[in-house]
Each structure stands twice: as C-alpha cells, then as structure tokens.
Image 1 (tube, rainbow, N blue to C red):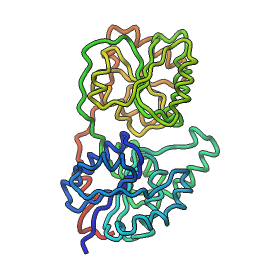
Image 2: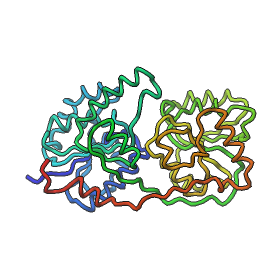
Image 3: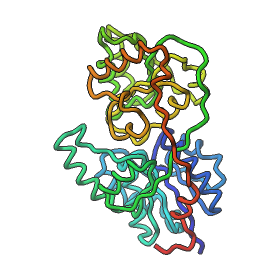
Image 4: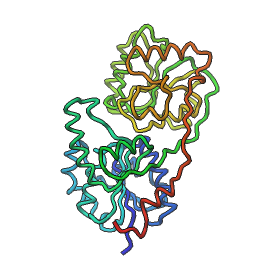
Amino acid sequence: MNKNVLVLVCGRVIGGHEIQLKTILQDLCALRDDVVVVCQTPATYAYFSALPCQLFQIDFGIEGKVWRQWQAAPGIATALDSHFARAGSILVSGGTIEACIGAARAAKLSVPAAKLIAYLPMYIDRSTSHGLVGRVYNLVVNRMARVVDEYLTINRIQAHLLRAHYTRPVKVLENVIQGVQAPQVSHGKRLVFLGRFDNGQKGLLELIDLLDRPDNPYGDVVLIGDGPDRAEIVSRAKAATAIKVHFAPWMDVTGVDRFLGIDDCLIMNSRWEGEPLVVREFTARGLPCVVRDITGMRGVTSKTMRFTDSDSLIRILNRLHEADSAHDHVHAVRVPQSRRQQVLASLFEKDSNH
C-alpha cells in the first residue's frame, strides 16, 4: 500500500503560522500527489479547503500544558488511527511545541517507523516569564520534544535555538511575505499594534503602561486584532490618562493597507516571537517598527529601534516623532532567496525509509 504524507494542523485558529503553513502545503502539493491534511476546527478546515489535496476535519486534540498534551496522545492516536495507518511521513504543525506534542507522540505510538517532522516557528524560553518554574518547565518540554525526528522552522536563529534545546536536526524554510501596499496619506502620527490579544506573549497590558506617560509624544495608539485577553486589555486602555487607545477588528492585508497612514509606526512588546510577519510587512510598506529587544526581533529590526525598558522606549519614540521622515528609520532586511521546494523535497522523499 502506498504511503501518504500526513499533515496535522494542530492550531485551532488562523494566525501567521497557519498562513505560512498554507504556502508550504501549496508547494508540497506541487511536489507530491499524496498529501492528506487533517484540521481540528471548522475555521482551519475552511481556510485550507482550497488546497489540491485530501482534507479532513477531526477534533483530535485538547488544550492545556505540555504534560496534558503528552498524556492525551493515546486518545489522539485512536482518533486518527485510519490516517496514521496510511502515513509514510507525518508533519505536525503548531505555533508552540505544546500545540504539537500530543499529536507528535500519538504519531510515534501509532507508526513508529514513519518519519515525524514538526513545523514550529520558534523556541520559547519559559524562564523569561516564569523564572525558576519556567526553567524546570523548559527541561520537561525539551525532553518531550525529542519525540520528533526533525524540525522545520522559519530562520537560522530559531533553527539554532531548536537544535540546541531539542537536540534534533532542523531545516529552515523562510517565511513568505504577502504583497503589501505603501500608504499614501496621513492619519496623524499613531502607534499601531497588529496581532493576537494574548497578553502572555504580546505583553499588551504592560505596553499600555509603558506608553501611558506624559513624555510619550504619541497620543494615539491603535490595537488591531482580537484574542482571549481582549476584555482586560480594553479595561486597562480605558484607565490610561496620557494616551488614547483605539481598537480595530482583524483585517486582511488589503484592509490593513487601506487603514494605515504614512506617519504610522508599528509597536510591539512581545515576550517571545519567532519572526513576526507583521514586522516584515510594515517594513515592506516603508513604515518603522519599534519593538522589544528579544531574540525573534533581532533578525528583522535595527538595534536603534529596539527597547529594553520604559525609558529606552520613550527615547526611541521621541527621536522618531521629531524626525522629518519616519521612513529614515525603516530597517530593510534582506530575505535570502527561498529554496522552498528543495527543502520540502529533502524532508519528504518518496523512497526514504526512516
């Protein structure tokens, strides 16, 4: 019996990682005619439905910490039994290792001989947010992550981190940037955040506090998106006195193009990122990006536009606000020429025996 390439979409919502996965699957379907994709939710099923491959929706996972995911593996194996039986190689995809680990272990329990690959955008060091508890958690996660045979990630920085912590081979597939349009008109000088309202990762509550100072020259802040912490973020925004925070719903790329003005500036206070597409898209529009100095930002922004605390942030914003042209502060990042199909072909060789 011929073996398929089985792709498990572990994410439950559409985000930047799922957008990138779709481009990968388009390339993979051009190489292979035996790709099978299993999604967890109606939303992800609808998003991937235009792909030229077999597509199924099965709610195979649970939410929770990594040990709950690990324990859920036998149940996931049962739910996906018929798909695992026909799989020669398996790709699990999720925005975090926690999202991937249950499906990854289930795959190994069901078909230990199949090559198991995880598509992951970043390594998350939980000690940065949880101290000693986070360091212990890292040790547990790093051990569990070795159930995967090989990782696929988005840039060389993340590849180095994943390889060092998970001790597995890692290949790189650069992110694809959607076509964007540079703004033509001004809507005033605004700071704009675009992303998921997840305070744990994005640090939006702290961002409002960092900006709510009388010496911040930007009086208008716009938060575009939605997420689980929206109510708390809205409440904190209403309490701000030195800034006015506006909210806008999710938009597609065309909608963002229409919304932005020539004097807008992206602002991000993320605690961790892989390689945020929003930064590269703002840069491609010719707009500046002011971001927290974290590993995932160092390959896509200039050091002069990264802050470490409230005072350094305000210094950057004052310099930017006073400049004749914000475009002078845009850090153009050269993206290496992609070798997408070559990388995918090396991962999913038809005749390989793992």
